[in-house]
Every structure is written in structure tokens, then in C-alpha cells.
Image (cartoon, rainbow, N blue to C red; front, side):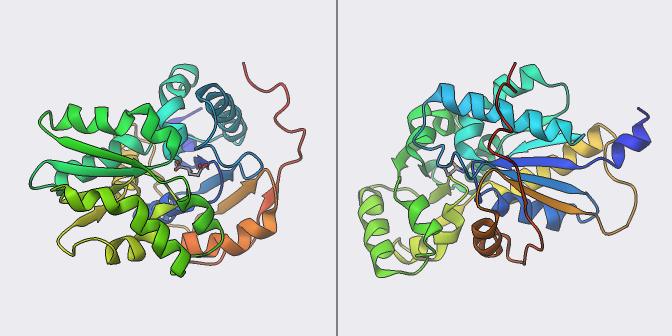
Amino acid sequence: MSINSKQNQAIGIFDSGIGGLTVMQELMKRLPHEPLIYFGDTARLPYGEKSPEAIIRYSIENAIFLMEQNIKLLVIACNTASAFALEKLQKIFSIPILGVIEPGAENAVQSTRNQHIAVLGTKGTIKSGVYQREIEKKMPKARVVSIACPLFVPLVEERFFHHPAARLIVKEYLAPLHEQKVDTVLLGCTHYPLLKQLIMEELPSSLVIVDSASTCAEKVADILKLHHLANATDQKPYHRYFVSDDPKKFQSLGTDFLGSPIDHVEHLSSGFFSGKHP
Ligand code: DGL
């Protein structure tokens, strides 16, 4: 295939469900001419509570589906899947593949002034220690406080963005931060940006809250340029959405994540993934 026809191919994005739309939103802003194909594995959400083996298997299957859509680059827009499956996918597939951990760590390191960073994530992401390692690689003297916040995902899925129950839970999870000198909080999960307002209200106003999405979009732009894969046209690109369960819920909740309406969501049949992994 010539470089030119590759440039017209889409970027593939997958997440365990809906949260990766926060990354998709940044990609749409930063790369307005790139076609994007999103897959949300809503039937198997949440990944944050699953074993590493299951997360790797799901991630391979999701990637195979997107490869079949002829994508030119893959973004793993799920922190938990990035934590456990990025290296494996990079070994299996030959196109550029990017996760959200390294961009998130970079954002946190650029933001901190006192090298004291808090990372909030799912149980899986926090247990993997991957953010801590990535931050320490970039800033060896960094002190990292990691907090698993397993109830944040269901709160967001219920649209409890400003609900008093959500405020109580945010208060409870973030209590240890009041004894720390942290100046930057990294939202290490795709759902958490929707609780940002509440999180900000529960923490001293001097703290900076960052996430992976904008830096990830910036990295994608760099990789496309480096590999001569950027779409050279100025046409309005297509954006397609696939899910493994309940397209209606995805469509309605997705608007909150994406900040704009989703016209159409395609549903993959339940047998789709059987026997697809190598
Ligand atoms: N997408 C996941 C993440 O960023 C959160 C939801 C889940 O647990 O599947 O870690």
C-alpha cells in the first residue's frame, strides 16, 4: 500500500467502554481531519477489577477488531488496558500503538513544582504501579501517592457528577491527600475527568489537576507526522462508534463524555470475539 493511501486510513481507539471518549474528544480537536473509529467494550466493562490475563485477552481482541477496520494507528484509550496490555499489543501488531499512561505521566511531571504527585486510578491501574514507574523514569526524585478509587467509575456511569453521594465518596478517597504536600493530581482513569469539578472542590485550590487526554492527542499528532501518516486532505472526516453491548446507553451517556452528540452507534454481535485471539 502506498504511503498516500495509508494517510487516508482511520485512527483506531479502544476503551473498556465509554470513558475513552474523553481521549477521542481531544483527538477530534487536535486532529480535525483524521477519520476515527472508536470501539467501546461495554459488554466486558469494567476492566479495572479484572485480572491482568483477562485484560490482555480483551485488549488483543479489541485490537484485532480495529485492525480489521484497516486502521493506521491504534490508541489504547483505557488506563487499565494501557497498564497491562500496551507492550503485548506493540509486540503483536506492526502499526504504531500508543497508550495513555506515558502521556499522563508526562503531563503530571510537567505540572509539578515540588515533585510530589498523586495518581488516582482503578484498582488494576494502581496495583500495576505503572504510573509510579513512568513518573519516576521521567523524574527520579518524584514522590508519588497512589490512590485506587473503584467507586468513581459507577458514579460517573450513573451521571452522579455533582450528586451529594459522589461528594462524600470523593471526600473519603481524597482524605489522605490532606496530609501530603502533593501539588499535582493526575486523573489516571478515563472516567475521572467527569468528576473533575467535584474533585477540585474537595482539594485546596492551589492543586493542579491533570489527565492524559490532551498530551495523548499531541503524541498521536507527533507519531503521524514522524511516520508520514497524517491525513493531507482538509475534508470533514468520518467518526464511527462500535460497542459490544447496549448502543443506546453508549449514545446517551457518550454525549457527556464527548461534549457533542453521537449520531449512530454500531453493535457487535455477542459471538464476535470468539476464537479471535492468537
Ligand atoms: N477505562 C478504564 C480506565 O481508564 C475505567 C473503566 C473500567 O474499569 O473499565 O482505567
